[in-house]
Image 1 (spheres, rainbow, N blue to C red):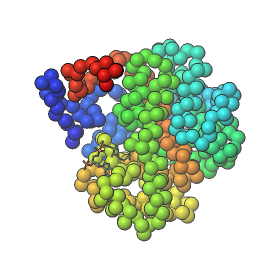
Image 2 (image 1 turned 180 degrees about the vertical axis):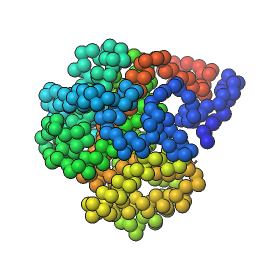
Image 3 (image 1 turned 30 degrees about the vertical axis):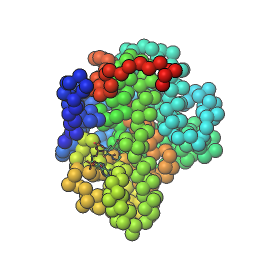
Image 4 (image 1 turned 90 degrees about the vertical axis):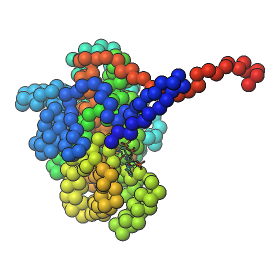
Length: 389
Ligand code: ACO
């Protein structure tokens, strides 16, 4: 239920508004539908489960951007364009090497994407076609940026993309210098499909608000990255890992989660503005977390996650608080060997496709976003000169 507030302003007018714009319809979209009561998610009509089973991130990205599943030729051409745009300009890499490598990885990513905008000579052309070119370039280069940031943090030289590898496999390769096995690459590919799009979430809405001023794509995406970083949004996956590390062992889960609930602390990776049942993406990720736990022989993180899920279901399930996409993605990324500070940037590697699709959709029938608020401030103050204050 939306938290609807009723307020009286100082002019004597009564207003109602939905806190956090819950349930407010901002525009129309054909990209994604979420059924929060039944836990169903479709991208352009296709259930997420089917895409996770049959598609690839590259194909799903094309589908999100252009609205149709690509033919073999369209997909091959799209893939070739992505590969051609994977590398970072040398100037950008040089600047990255001078940036504070220990800074927050999402701030780092945001800054590099903003920087890349300086190299886009056509960045003030607002045709959908020109926007799609820039969008493809960003989808292509995000893994390279994220991997380079991780390596610079570790005092290592960034690794150039390997065009013999798919999008997901190449990201793993650029992070640790080793080509991943087929299963690890496929699991990351599925993670990227699952995180690619999710309707009018905070970061996507941000990108649409920004592009609605007819500014450049890089400004819209930079703002979206800033929004995704927050712990109430994409940053929650790192919060989940902090929680698992804080708990430390299976036998402490019950005690620590109960204390947190009693003190009204939020459990990261749980709850959602739209889903009031299990997030369908969490169901899929839970299965991969379990399989990776078995393969790696390190079951603790999965076992702790599962126990937290059971306790939360028992304690707050009746309030519609269930695992969201961030909950099991934390242990999956851990098992895939990613460092904690890469988790939210990996989310961005995927979500760039959704952001780009929304930016293009917004531009097709643009109207500036400009909502209003209820003014509750003073209405009859006197100006007091500075000498008398
Ligand atoms: N743990 C414990 N209690 C929770 C949680 C949680 N994770 N989430 C919601 N609640 C409780 C709140 O305390 C609140 O209780 P109250 O009514 O007694 O005050 C009630 O449920 C409603 O919570 P709100 O924060 O008002 O719900 P909202 O729709 O605004 O928030 C949100 C959704 C931000 C996702 C929230 O559930 C949350 O903070 N979760 C933890 C962070 C997280 O996992 N974010 C990732 C979301 S998915 C994504 O962005 C990719």
